[in-house]
Length: 267
Image 1 (cartoon, rainbow, N blue to C red):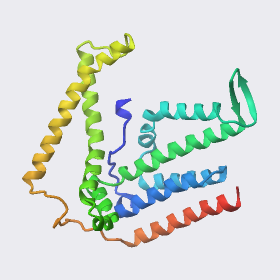
Image 2: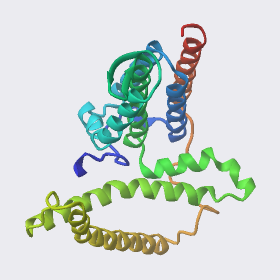
Image 3: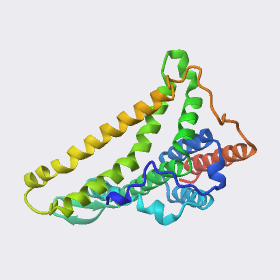
C-alpha cells in the first residue's frame, strides 16, 4: 500500500504535456475539476472520460502507474459509494431491513465514484508532468496579483511545492522503516486495536525524526544558497507562453463549453 502512493511524483517522458507552461496545466486541471462538478449525466462523464484518456495518452505516463495511485483511496471510495447508495431516498430497488438501495442512490453513487477517481487522476497527472520548481513558478505567476493585498504568494507556492515533493520522500522513508521493524520481528497485523496503535510508535517516532532532519537539511541548504524569499529573485527559465499553450487553452475552453451545453440542453 505504501508503494502505491504516487501523489507528488514527477514522471519524466518529454511529452507535449510535459512541455506545456505550468500555468496552462494548473488552469487546465482546475477547468477539468469544474467540468466534473458541472456534468450530471452519462454523456457528460463519457465526454470527460474521452478527454482524460486523451490527456493520459498525450502525457505518455503509463496507465499502470496512474492506476496504482488509486489504490490508497479504495476504502474511501467504497465507503462514499456505499453511503450514497444506501441512504439516498428515491425509487427502491432492493431492501435489507431499514437499508434500501434506490435507483437515485445507485446513480448518485456511480457519479460520485467516477468524479472522485477522475479528480484524483486529473490532479495527479499535473504533478506527473510538472516538476516542483515549475509548479512553484506557475503558482506564483498565476496568483501574483495577490501581492497587492500583501499576500506572500511566493512563500505559499514554495510551501505547497515542498509539501508535494516531501510526500514521495516520506512515503519511501516510511516503507524502509516498516521493513526494518518487520525484520526485527514486529507484526503490525496482530493483536487488539490498542496493541496495533501502540505498535505504530516504533514507526512514527523514526519517521518524525527523519522528517525533522530532512526539513532542517533543506532549510540549511536554502540558507547556504542565500534564499530570502521572492523579492528580487530571478529565474533560470522564465515562464513564457508558447503556441502549444494557446492550442491547449483552446481545447480546454472547447471541452468546457461542450460540458456546459450538454448540461443545459441534453440532460
